[in-house]
Image (cartoon, rainbow, N blue to C red):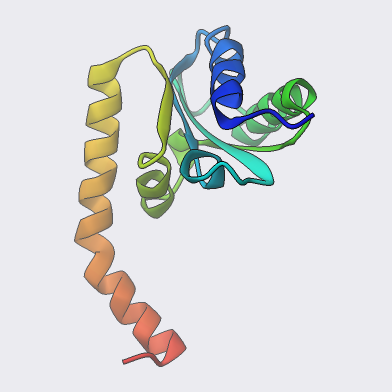
Length: 133
């Protein structure tokens, strides 16, 4: 039986709060925007030294654990290494873990600032590549 969005939110939260290294986390994408979804997208921000963490392995381990729990495909994005346009999308989702609101706001604000600073250049590049006026 497929879980409802509110059930998924609760289950994901209960799992992620057991990981003390996770400072904040979001549900985003279709699961945050609609009751109709095929997979679950999760963004996590992790404390610790960025040089000593295998981010891909970490994300895959979380994904695997969550998939076994919710019986649905789960994609985990480590926000520490995500590009600003992806952080922009993730941060429009549902906050499921928030252990340090100041750190979350500071990180998201900086990413949004970089995202909007680069937006005109990104649009110019897309116009040139795609040929859209």
